[in-house]
Amino acid sequence: MAVYRFKHFAKAAESCGVTQPTLSSMIQKLEDELDIKIFDRKQQPIQPTPAGMAIIEQAWKVLVRARRIKETAEEEKHSLLGTFNIGVLPTIAPYLIPNFFPKLMKEHPDMDVRIIEMKTEDMKKALLRGDIDAGILARLRGMENMDCHSLYFEQFFAYIAQGDSLLEKSSIKTTDLSGEYLWLLDEGHCFREQLVKFCQLKSASISKKAYNLGSIETFMRIVENGKGVTFIPELALRQLTESQKLLVRPFALPIPTREIVMMTTRNFIRQSLLNMLINEIKASVPLHMLKLRHTQQSI
Image (tube, rainbow, N blue to C red; front, side):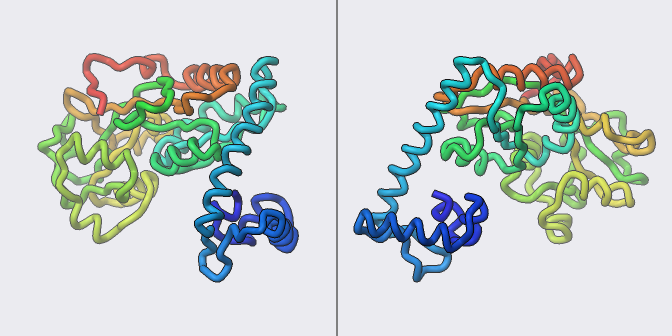
């Protein structure tokens, strides 16, 4: 499974905690035992053979079922032990994780919770493969086949460069925004897609040419140095200095808001651990963010 995932023997060996010769040798023994070639080693990156793909699909099912035996035992004991992998959107992690994670580790030192930043589509695939146990992300269409537990509602704010005429306004209307110097995340970020849809932004043409990738923090530094507009989530406000807060403007009504959820597969077993994490996260955010307010519009 590791070789299939990484398509590289050395990376697969590292993820399994063994040497590459050991991993190669064991796969070779399995191929000899089954009298079938699982991987085509002549291709780069390494690809499974058609017959190998059928073997890999069965191997994945075996691993998932074996893991569920242990998870069932831990759940019956209401245990918080064991490794728990959580995928988190890059536009959520820097602002949420510091709020609850240090306290969680201090109160439950025996827990092994691991945070992995990933985009929405990667998170869905990782959940279905069993690479992660849960995901923290913004609720979007297409999640109906998953279990989603609401965590909080977070509105968007505009972050505007000093000297920009928008900074003179007390609130920002979507019609005030143009694509000229809007610093938006790259394609594939739901944060970007939600805002583009809500604000009906056709493109951010000049900024797209100037900076193609980026992060919210990168765009904030650009704005602070005197150019353009970007957007920040509500939890980011708690980390701003007084001078940075002067660059923040809310949206006019209705205020664009995203719902942040904890997502698992439908057959997720460790509900005791999940509920504890959900409660810890809810306790770490301001009380007014736990419900969608009448001035907000979920996007």
